Image 1: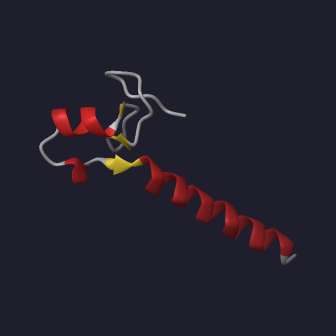
Image 2: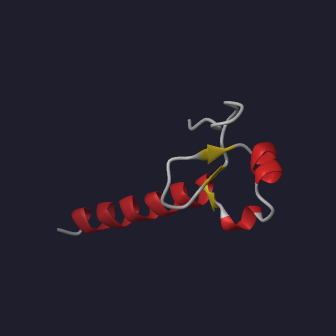
Length: 61
């Protein structure tokens, strides 16, 4: 679980191409447009899709 760099609560956002993570309240307080931040959930979903594709490919051999 990633933690917010400000308050250490569970993070939900990160700055793209960075290792800075933010919880929703801190992200809202520090950024005028939270949509510019990358959602950790979205990142996890992308990783899951890649792993699923690799597993499908491996099971097809």
